[in-house]
Length: 335
Image 1 (spheres, rainbow, N blue to C red):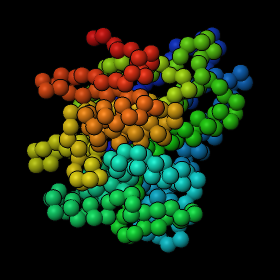
Image 2: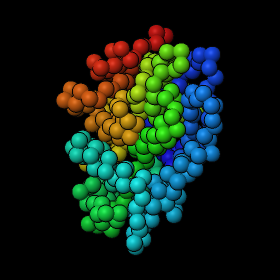
Image 3: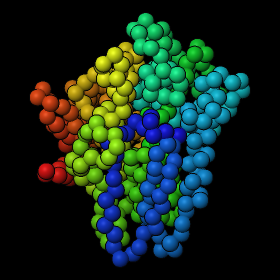
Image 4: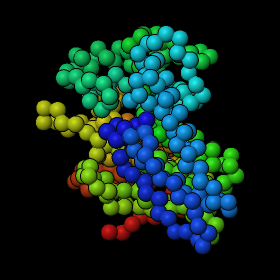
């Protein structure tokens, strides 16, 4: 569902595999405009790729704004009598929860602004404050609600974009599928969002790498840190690769739903750790909108969330802020 040009987690998380003598099942492919990598241990060596690809296809038909006949696209186009499915309902409810949780910093009704700035499938506008202010009039999650399996809008111009966290939800959906098949040791990565279940058969943790920020869009960046995962998700949001230049000014892709403009702060990337990937993905986006100082205050109040944040100091050097709960999970890589 997230095409390459709209991937919100540009600091990719690469699973680092070190297997025991038991051979894993490895599944790779393309989905949501990105790639996926799944590794699991199964005594029967079953290959679930056909089932997983069907799950991801059905997922896109519900939530992709790049598919014109998807449920979300039909709702945005104000087609009559559109019934939403379980995927859509789960995303809508989580969006409302995180919207309240972050005091509106996370808001999927920014979709018209995403298009206006040229970060979505819609037509980019010539940016003028007057135009942005006019769009803000129909941005706000309080302008839309779910009633049963139908969406009700206060203004027909309200539209939704779940791209900021749906990829994380797809990780949860695939993970739930693997668990339903009795798989107890696996890692699922879709577009950079990750969930790891259990340990490897040899007792090792699943380990992923966190990239150092860079504007180089063509190649992977050197790793900044390693993280050990067990029954844990991590999602990353960053502003350093996805940007546009307008009248000589660089604008990053994270849009503030309150101002209508891309956020300007020294926070370069957020890797958010949570029990499920949909929460990690949504919260990573919300924290990017908050900025470093507000994020620090927020995270001190919400100790159930753990974050690894890379920011630029006043001299332009990379610095790191990490929450206390990551002490035994994160290890820095010395250059």
